Image 1 (cartoon, one colour):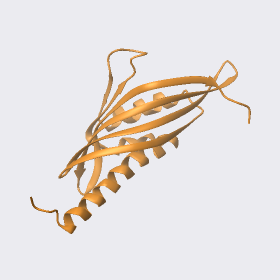
Image 2 (cartoon, rainbow, N blue to C red):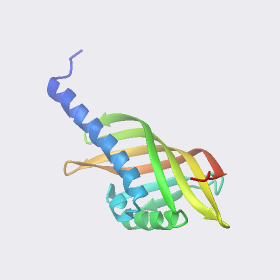
Image 3 (tube, rainbow, N blue to C red):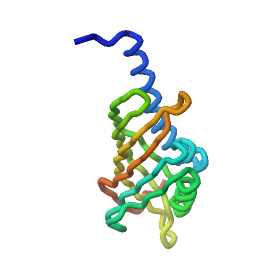
Image 4 (cartoon, helix red, strand yellow):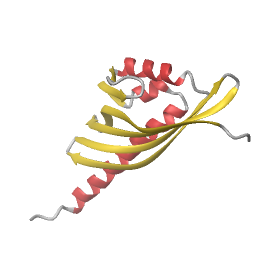
Length: 156
């Protein structure tokens, strides 16, 4: 079996760091509500597929940057602030394509009838990536909810 060259190992490391940077940037931009920038992290025909079985058994599919950006604006509007903490990421590289699985704890602060509340979602993203013009982008991001907790927030 041939050993990978140091150039191959370097390219793989660079790609893995770039893909981790992509998922971290997604979370960072969502928390800053820069939905247009989030949408630009997707390929032009990219898809964001959300699975919320507690709301609807059918997934919600958003396709294209405009649709993805609009969905994010709508989805974030009910929250005062969010904090996404990205966990582990596992990726498989296939040249200019890659697949991955990323975990995230998404914290959402909102107000319900004068009470400040915290909604925490354990999210698992199934990602498909493509390198276009030297830049890694999402082709498809499948958001799956593992569990959720909704509770009153403690006083500061």
